[in-house]
Length: 156
Image (cartoon, rainbow, N blue to C red):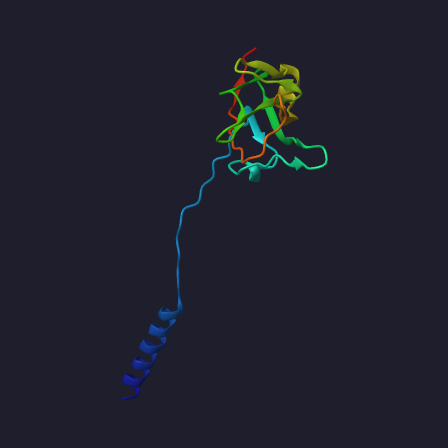
């Protein structure tokens, strides 16, 4: 009888030990990219969100959008261009936008914005978007638009 109670106690304690034990197994990996060339926003949380050009009531003009980018290219310079003509539009009116990258005006044609010497080391460059006041001034309304930037990594 003593052996039966001891065996029952061992089975019960063994069962309860398994009941509170939990094991998890998972794989983990990481890919660390080789940063030979990149153009990345210095503050990544603004991308993909609507950006507001502030309206100055006193001057009756639109403010600018300024954002910084980290830029590097070990193999050469960096060129930039616009993927489409940048503008803001309302149902009735349109406001053209001027886009500068690293103080270089952008157009639909690629233009070198970072030289090879600077790009090799890496730099922080500013994106500057400003409205071009239409003839007759700004007209009231809700305006929306998209700016398409294309960056090309130049070979030496």
